[in-house]
Length: 347
Ligand code: GLY
Image (cartoon, rainbow, N blue to C red):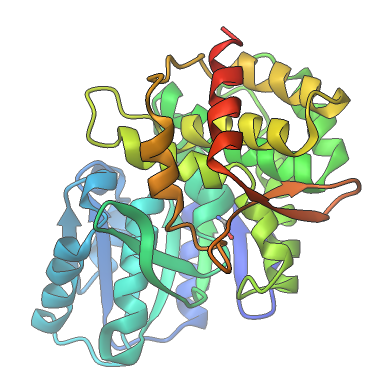
């Protein structure tokens, strides 16, 4: 059964793609359908969707391909397919395909409509919703992009059974974040969870998590204020992810954000009761990572590009008392260094 979470401009459908896609396409007449996937998600392509597509492009998978070179491939394929402004792009994949495909669609001929079909937990609960579209550039994550809402988001929890456990945990960091900042009932549920597997009621977990995201992006679509709360854990998290991206042991987005949430919360609030709960939840789902001890200066350098920075100050967003309540706080390199030392001592 499909559930709909409605936003002002579009709907997030949560249920089998075989139900939600035909319905969405009926409501979105198009001249041509352009399908974008990566070599992993192309294998998940339902035959009925493959038959519907007038043109398709399959990219290399992974964050290292979320760049302008891949955009060039997409724009070239769109040109070769003769897409006009009534064309519809459909993105089947995780955050990389959704963000990159969305950015290409939002800029091709000054914008064609696109449908996000997220296949990972991370994309279903976060990346596909809210219209943030970007690629990485010059070693900085999500630094070139636009805001543009999709025409629809079709999230099918059945795709979650295709994910390696590490990938599922990566997306779960955003569910933890949504629960902590905006849904005490979901937070209570998460605190009781012991493992992540297909026996969980993913439809219910996703619905609650998506509702937090939707409530915040509807109130502040262009991140003038409250939306920065969704960046909790991402100031340090993004820097960690970028720092380890080309290493032999890259961190997943969620692993980096989990460390980011712990360290940012600790900087902002210290070891209060909620910190204790957060530490317990994160320790259950994310392995402790041996961060290199000399990393702080390089991480600090990466944090200079954070999009929340203002007047030369690096700022991080943490939850304050009450749900949907933002505390934006400037941090210093010494805060970062102390927090990393604190994290290292948690082993
Ligand atoms: N992923 C954070 C946001 O959409 O604002």
